Length: 85
Image 1 (cartoon, rainbow, N blue to C red):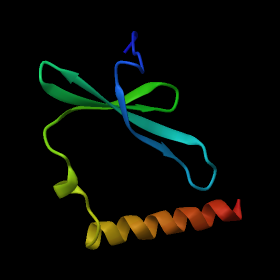
Image 2: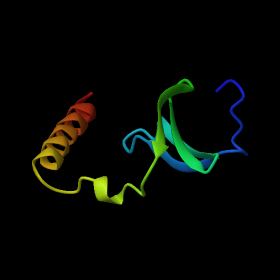
Image 3: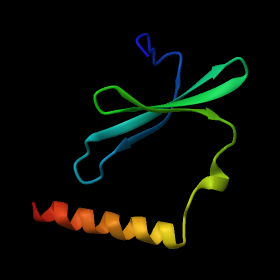
Image 4: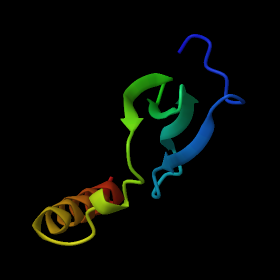
């Protein structure tokens, strides 16, 4: 991480808060010995996660069901509370 060079990694995702536009994190991909790794860097250049990428991930995305509904409800409540501040 000390020698992290954006020219050697592929930016996969960059997340910002919709309400404030503030940076949340970014995920980068790096290939090493025919294996792909994803590194997520959070606010303050903190390494949040690093995982070996073994699939495209599309089969793991939650788009409906009880977990999705719960997260959606919590997010809406947080956004409502943020607007009151």
